[in-house]
Structure formats: C-alpha cells, structure tokens
Length: 83
Image (tube, rainbow, N blue to C red):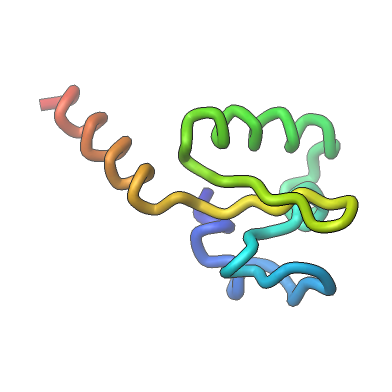
C-alpha cells in the first residue's frame, strides 16, 4: 500500500496511464513485489472490494489507485477498536 500511496517515488513512468491520476499498473506492482501476476491481482481485488483502492482498465492492463479517504476511515476505525 505504501508504494501506491507514493507512486512517483516507487515506480517508473508508465507508457499508458498516469501514475497519480490513473494508478499503478499491476505489472509494475507484480515486478516490484516479486509475486505472480495472479497472486497480486487477487490481493488487489480484495483491497478494491474493501474500497481501499480503485481499479481502472486501460488497454490490456489494470491500474490501482489508493482511496485515501477510505484508508483514513479504516485506520480510524481500527484505532477506535484498540482503545
């Protein structure tokens, strides 16, 4: 999650899609984390289903972008549970 929160620092420029506006290509995430593409896609789908990231298809690729407000709300809810 920290990588896609600051994509310009953690990923190279993309041929298709803007790192910030469109999100990070699943291929770049897969390469950086060193897992298979199906594994990364499965994990990113869980995050998308939870509303923590959004996904967008451009050509044959899926791009993932963090949903900052949802992340803040989830962190706040977790903090409240721990108090």
